[in-house]
Image (cartoon, rainbow, N blue to C red; front, side, top):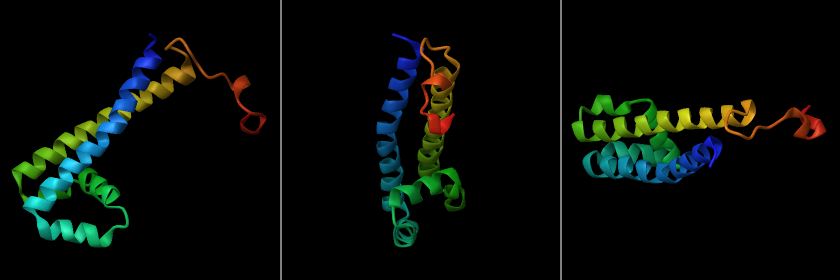
Length: 112
């Protein structure tokens, strides 16, 4: 198994786990801060995207809730880890250090 396959598997698992991480932060927000959750729910078309913004902007600091802050901190580490795995996967595909690589000759003529 090449490093590219391992990185792809890690990234795929991370994409699936992202739904559970966001759901956990949503649950904590809904139970412990219903007024903030209502504002997020009313102002957003997609609540999961709004919760992602809440996580990345660290809006939990203003609420001074250690449980919510722990959930958001865990979600942030998860996001940063997923970005690192994605960057390594892209590098392994384009630079070829994972055994496979994408050569410009393989691309359609439109992208050359």
